[in-house]
Image (cartoon, rainbow, N blue to C red; front, side, top):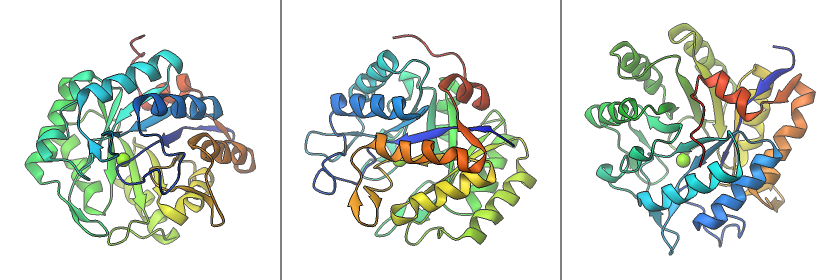
Length: 280
Ligand code: MG
């Protein structure tokens, strides 16, 4: 694994953080495109996108998704575009409403879980419906594992032919009421993934104050990394992150210490088995 490339995902906006939490959170499509471009120049090869209404509430508007995708494809050659199908603030019926825009990837949570103050509802028939839509539009899912059963559910979807392998799996650690950001949990999840889906690629996300710690675990263990203001608006305990790019740079600068290097967008596409992007 010496000098193996690390794909850096930047989750630029998310559903929750507001400008009042950190003025650097990009909200309008223009801000999102600029923030993505800076993160791309700092080493991010994959962007995870949520869009927002003008009042900063989460949006399902395909036009907004389309604008951001178009800008990213124009300014960030080869960068992997991933749309969120996440639930916060959106109806189930709207969560896949932009998949016809054919991003490279989309997130797919393969089960339900408690969040800090709500239930993240992903019933079996809904998950299968989203998986079918992604297959129809040639979109690679990123399997979001917020709780343990989701890993085995993903393997079952692959067995049923609803997801084409090899899978790309993200472990999400540190959300209250879901999986804790404990090293023992991280190690167990990786061992189970290797047993159940041996061909899968993987990344882990740590939320809030766990972001940087989980980034370092991933670099050490040969996985890929996710950062960004969606998960954490701070650079460290003492100050706010100046930008998404600053969080990406923190990982890029650390790669060498773990015998890793930053994956180029072309390398990231090859690692994830993605098609060549449609040029804008
Ligand atoms: Mg998200």
